[in-house]
Length: 578
Image 1: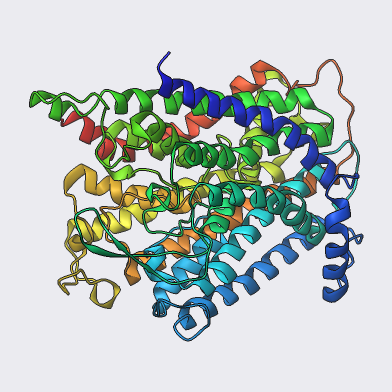
Image 2 (image 1 turned 45 degrees about the vertical axis):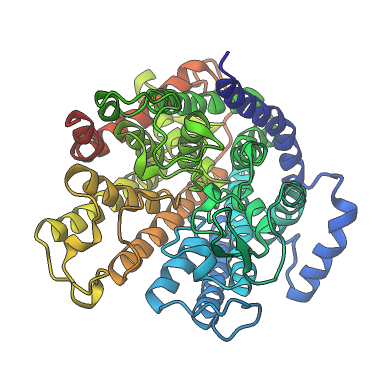
């Protein structure tokens, strides 16, 4: 077997073997059971709750959960904005990095707040150490903890009983950060330090290259940043090149480690649901649906990349490494292709190669991973997105067998379906509406005024595209798809650091993050209050392969109907024109 294929298989299997016990541990944490981290973190949590005057045992209904979630996120947004627009005079800035402009700060603060980490700036030159640690790295913990806490609320609502009390949001949030994210991050950061990733507050270092040139190499607290960047499916890079940078991802071992940890919690949350609800078979069905979707994207992408660029092949040039444009020799086309789909399917958005340089159909597969947005998905929120598809599939399945739709002993009625449909349609609406808007401006070469200016100072919209035709359209489609999926990766041929893209992308980020959290929590809260109906011979079984196939079909149909025309204008047309 090809050693590079073997490396991919090892990464995937290792993730699964770690995810099952981690899922059991997460379920125990959320259920209030005793775990090995109690001795270390119980005193810290008690101190936090005492100082904040929060009673972690006071249970909330679904509306109170949402109020707490949205309020605390607003406070975090304001803090991040303060740091970004004032970092020029704040401490821990040895390289004298200037403050970000208001529109860039808005985009950065929102993107890190919503677990997207879209970066319209280069990390080592756009953010000081103070901002990187106390604003951006903090938000990488907070946004991941928020998503996991929201999933815990849904788990609680789906238990076999009738109630409107669904635990305490602050308790779920803090435990997500202290009991799950922090311990694993410490281990991952230590491993990166031993492999050469910097962990310092010193400024740039001067290095003499092999050819005698003097280079200024940025350093910083990189190892800690990288750990939560991947474990929390955040994806924001300390350096502009993200995990393609040799200090952020030094070798193949760290590449494997980063690949494993970014998939780890999305896997584990599915199994946590199974252990929490005592429905392990259902968890395996859900994981199986996600895995089938993932394989349908990753296998064609690897195949396309390892066979190289056909236009280069027509020139008589051999490509033993496959399509290596935009890829690191350290990782090769196999590991880069696997990473590209994993990072877009799970909404991490980190890169170890440049997605803009992939083959057209590979780019389409990345887009599809974000368009479906629930083949594993981000920490916590990935399960919430999948939950919406489950509700739709339950309703369709119930109609097919002539019974009132039920899920886990609760009737799914008109109110839940309306919420599910709003959430399901919001995602394509945001992507397609804003892509159409930017495409209109580009096609008409609109003078954007202060909203946009290219490097030459011109204000016409065509200046934000470095590539024409189908590929240029794909760059714009990819940007809004990445925002709506809370992903953060991009086709870097797009000139996006300007008021137009910073503000419109920020709007998409806000709507696409919080409405898909509000919707599932509302549905779960409504279901929790309904009378529990024990399963009978006529109940639609949801822990079977048949139901898994139905969920998969619903995903494919919704994605195909909504996005095929846009994909046909972009990556498919580009592929056919080669």
